[in-house]
Length: 212
Image (cartoon, rainbow, N blue to C red; front, side):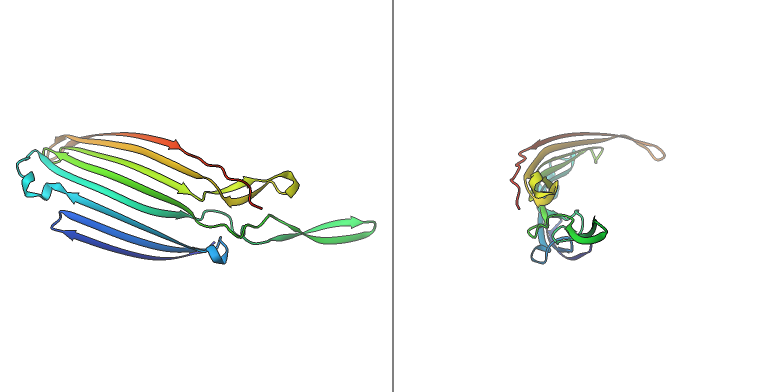
């Protein structure tokens, strides 16, 4: 398979306090039919560095305080080639002393196959204390994936076991907490103690019907 991609990115920052990033990506994949080759995947993120605010000077023990938020879409085209095309193979059989050759379809083509898309929304908080000797990072996210590329089981009457389709959706949400402390920081020796907790919840899988 081949892929053609275009990528554009814009960034804006103001006095190291406010940061905004916008990205858009366009991908074309040969695994899909001509009407569904292209997919557009935008993303956006913003951050507010509160530590740069003047009113934070009174909190001298806080070395970092940043709030983050992001939203973005990514695509998936990891399927075999030619699933949206009719492919045939030679099959030989004999009748008496005569050998016949027929063309047998390899699969049921799906002309409506398209990009699988995953949309992620997240918010985060970065905290640092005592000249960054103690750092805490917290993130919460929700990831929605739709148009899942799945080999859907078919009825035996079709003559095929399955057909690749865009079916179902999944929601994946979770919280991640990371704590990192620098217990010793000398000229020739330092010791760090990382600690990470991840809580993830999978839910909402929707199964769709066969599309022939």
